[in-house]
Length: 152
Image 1 (spheres, helix red, strand yellow):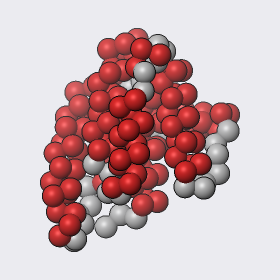
Image 2 (cartoon, one colour):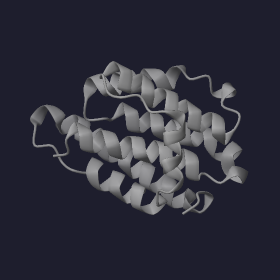
Image 3 (cartoon, rainbow, N blue to C red):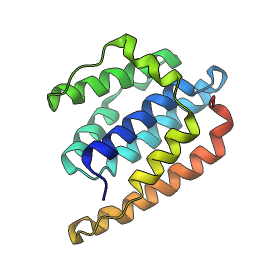
Image 4 (cartoon, rainbow, N blue to C red):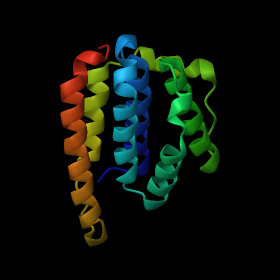
């Protein structure tokens, strides 16, 4: 079973890395699908409180205001800092977010899939696990179909 820190870090790394590694020429094509995938991921986070908050943020985002890849990156930066404030963690400075340029996309995706695919031996989480598996399969199909639209 993954800890909140493990799956939280894996999820944030995934969101940030994909928003940085998305090729500029595919931004318009991918933006809405990417945000929809992020929504489904957030709807299936192992922590109900986290899931509820993240889903609300993504439901309320004004997608028409995200016009560029930089806007998308800043959206996730602000979203992450909003969560950090809620859980009393340090706030990231904008210059720190460029570390995602150095991330290796396939490694970040593999790490996310590995961590979030762990099974929970809790009967209350069994239904959530089923939905998480469906969401994970959808993500795997999407990333497989679109992997050429992201820098390595």
